[in-house]
Amino acid sequence: MKKLLLLTLALCLVLTACKKDTPAETTAELTTATSETTAETTTETTAVENTAPVVTEIVPDYGDDVDVKYEVLTLDDEELNAILDARSASILSSYIPNISSIKELGGTAEYDVKLASIYKTDSILSAVFSGHYAIYYENSEERGDVLYTVNLDPSSGKILETSDIVNYEKMVDAFESLADAPDFSQYNAAYGIYPYVSINENEFFVYITQNGIYEEVLKYHISLDDAVDFLKIQLD
Image (cartoon, rainbow, N blue to C red; front, side):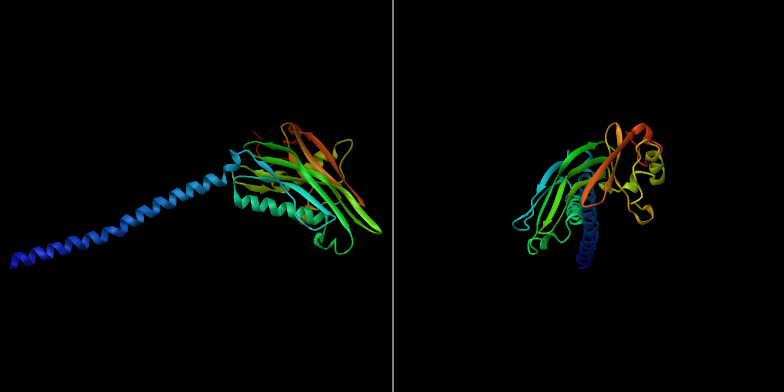
C-alpha cells in the first residue's frame, strides 16, 4: 500500500513538473516568432535601398472641366507610400485650393505633374516632379509652373526636408555668390519655410518660386564639390 502511495506521489510530481515546463516552451516559441516578424518588418522598411521605385499616375475625379493627373513614387513600403500620396495631394491643394468647389463655382482647372528626374544612392533618393496648373473663371485666371521635390533616406525610409539635407545659411551664402543669385527673401528658415532642393550625380539644385498671376519656378545649381561645405548628408 505504501509503495502504491509512493508511486502515486511520484507520478503527481512528474506531471506537475511537466506543467511548469510548458509555458517556458511556449514563451520561447513566441519570442522566436516575434524576432522573425521584426526582421521581416525591418526588411520591408529598408526595401527602398534595394528596390527600384516605380511611378504611379493618379487621376482623381473632380467632375467635368477639372482635369487633374499627377504622378507619385510607389515604393515597397505601404506606410511610406501613404505618406508620399498624402504629400502629393497636399501639393495639389496648395496650387488649386478648394478644388472640389471649382465646378460648382463655374470654373475650370488643369493640373498635370510628372516625374522629371530621379537620382538614387545609398544615402539619398532625390526625385523632381514638374508640370503646370491653371485655374479659369469667367473674369479671372491663374496659371503657372508646378515643381517640387521628394527626398528620402533609403536606409530609414524617412522623408528628408531641406533642413535635413543642408545647413541653410551656408547654402544661401554659397548661392548668393553666383553671378545670377537666387532671391531667397520669400523663404524663412525660422518658420520652416524653405525652397525645394534636389541632387543628382554631379550637381546640387535649388528651386525658387516667383509668385504672381503666372507663377514661375527658377532653377539654380552648383557642383556637388562646391556643395560639400553645406551638405548635411554623406554622399557616396
